[in-house]
Image 1 (cartoon, helix red, strand yellow):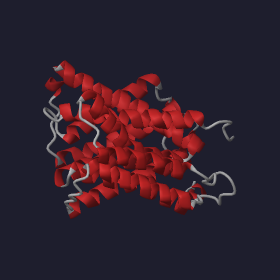
Image 2 (spheres, rainbow, N blue to C red):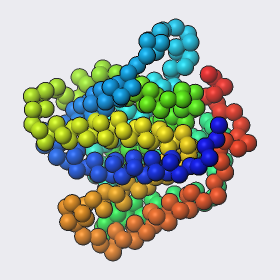
Image 3 (cartoon, rainbow, N blue to C red):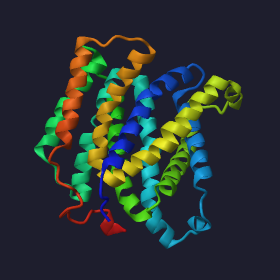
Length: 313
């Protein structure tokens, strides 16, 4: 049943991006005592625990068999893409390339989401979407490099950034499919985060990882991890999935353009960093890109052919 208004979806997406845009402060503090993979691990643990407390699993969820796999494989794949591979690719990329490169290349996720949606959901795309993408990426480049335009390419790091954007595109499309089948956004998100953690566990020995639970006795570190786990993971995955359910993966993914804008706003308010003329132009281009991308896009639920994945269910 089509919702009467999409306003809650837009508000949910905006809330999600606002929280994700300020997590750099928490991560920057935590990197003094934790490695990126350790932050990711505790983030998923706290997020999974919070979702389990709010929405405990039902006994029927543990019944294995053909019916279980038929309804569960998409959620497992969503957990692998959105909660494991995305963070691993992004975290490793930061070790090989500039943070500015990461912010720009990961921001191509809306384009990948549009292409994946076109291929798997039959979603029609308008020219305005691509014009908006071009404007937004230009703005993100201006903000990320702050006018220096010194682009230092690193094949491995930049490729990992692109892979991160690609797996997030698949995650968003999967969420659209699963949300229509599962009904409960909380239960679906709990499963996604849980599977993401389970897929991460076998990979931990490959990284410089240690549990080091004594570090959780440091109150500031614990609070930062709780914010990342409960806020940026548990809450934001629920709100993002809810937005995708109402708006579709393409419209929701466009909000990713706002992450650099939120980050620079927080830098001004918290770190007292000035907004340069170049950054101001970048912000204007991002907002223009948002407006263009949202205009005159055909509703994917209207006259869309059956999706490739729905035919396999």
